[in-house]
Image (cartoon, rainbow, N blue to C red; front, side, top):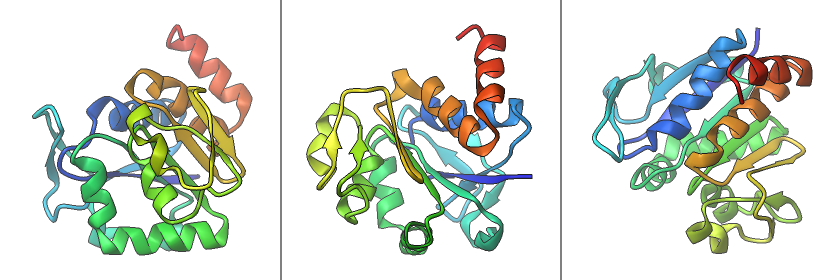
Length: 181
């Protein structure tokens, strides 16, 4: 089974994070919600508290196939400030493993030069941080092993792109039909 980790920092955007988790679980893709805060309970940017499955320190990254970075403020800044997570993002990039980021979070990849020469999208206020990317207004961009999404309103399309990557297009299409997307 495929393994995906969605990372939660204080101030995450709840729709972007939880939509991905929901869709992956509906598609029977193993997914873990991971807190970077040292506590399993993490508060979103809109003061919604979520109980994650595990702490960052508990993740066996050798078994993880995809890292997902939801946006939100200050969630994105908190993810980027997490050195352990950023070391893994760098390693995943170097190894060609899957990285996905939505809303403000693609800026994390841009700051590390991971979007150079790729099509990418993000929340409009963060497009200037997609260093070296061909920035689009598309809801989702897939460039080899990197998936980017524009924001909360594109969370379903972003999540379905991840399902397609971790399973296949047929599964993603069937799931889209089941959720009336």
